[in-house]
Amino acid sequence: MEQPANKLKRGLSTRHIRFMALGSAIGTGLFYGSADAIKMAGPSVLLAYLIGGVIAFIIMRALGEMSVNNPQASSFSRYAQDYLGPLSGYITGWTYCFEILIVAIADVTAFGIYMGVWFPEVPHWIWVLSVVLIIGGINLMSVKVFGELEFWFSFFKVLTIIIMIVAGIGIIVWGIGNGGQPTGIHNLWSNGGFFSHGIMGMILSLQLVMFAYGGIEIIGITAGEANDPKTSIPKAINSVPWRILVFYVGTLFVIMSIYPWNQVGTQGSPFVLTFQHMGITIAAGILNFVVITASLSAINSDVFGVGRMLHGMAEQGHAPKIFAKVSKRGIPWVTVVVMMLAMLVAVYLNYIMPENVFLVIASLATFATVWVWIMILFSQIAFRRSLSKEQVAALAFPLRGGIATSLAAIIFLVFIIGLIGYFPDTRISLYAGLVWVVLLLVGYAWKVKFQRRVAAQTRTE
Image (tube, rainbow, N blue to C red; front, side, top):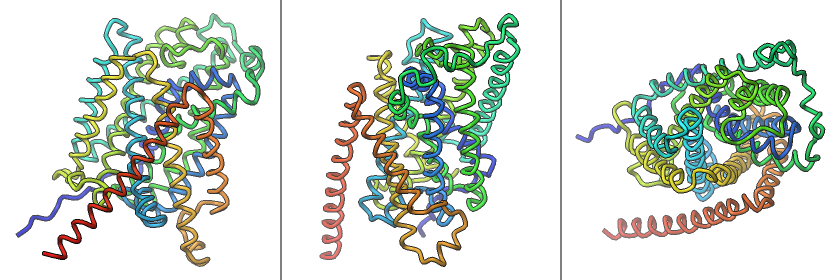
């Protein structure tokens, strides 16, 4: 008698999912990547983060509409297949895996940089190898253990950012920790004006800003292992606007108020460097610990996201069947091991080019992220068109504005892809992304041909 196959277990509570959403959105893109965005835009980067946040929220509501209606572990890959066709599902799923792998490489790279602040004599690649092994081990435990660890990673990170904002306000208003000299907020306009590099500088920074929001779509993937997706998913998604205001705009407002934006470096997190330059070394040490925790949280979510996506794609026939294997604890262990092996690429990159790896990785991840977001929006449009007026009215968690809202967001995201091609430093990422899509098309054609051949052989036997 054949044993029943192990399945993914529903072990993620609303608390877990809400903080997973925080963990995925507040990570390397904010703590480290914001330095390059600040250099491009100056203080007007605050406006760029607000604009990007609006688009990110639209994407989350579009995904939430489908996730609440039909919770799936493979989420938007499954929706793309159901509403746009098998080819779309195949490309979306594999591009998401590509995106998160690249993001994970950026995250573990940033982890090595942060550790270098404390241990400058230790090569980055040693820290990168260590974190790959540790996070891989965590993800081989039960999903409840993963969710609990992610909750505490994110809780500590969120709490410390709030404390940092409060302390920053103390420096701005009362000069606490600055010899009693309030800094005020004049730094937001006294070094070249709010639009220091013009409106164009703010616009050009949008590609790095959108990288910072990459990963928020993991909320949709959690639906397959959520105890109550119809309650937990809307709660997590509706927390996105205040999260953007507090954790992105609020933190960068404080940083650029107490320290001139044009002196923010990239030899570590701008959060840590700001407090170091203010002479508050203890605070800088605490913040470095926080950004290390943030990167661990992000890597943890990266491994989870790819694992669940590949598992779902294997069940759809879009990935090797071995990826559908699940342990007795409900963990797709094969996909976790494969993700660990893939992240070892970061070890090699940090060994051969430790100084330049982050910007190239970030722009490549942005292309993949934007592609996945566009497919989510097109899937939502196709989903809406498949419904009657009565069914649309009955949706439990609808995207306000429906198809028109999704189309506006798609136009914005196409513009972001154009920005990636505009910069000579990131143009190679656009070329690499287009090559990736071509390879997927070839791979899909080969897969269909192979499946037809197998089906034909089965019929003749």
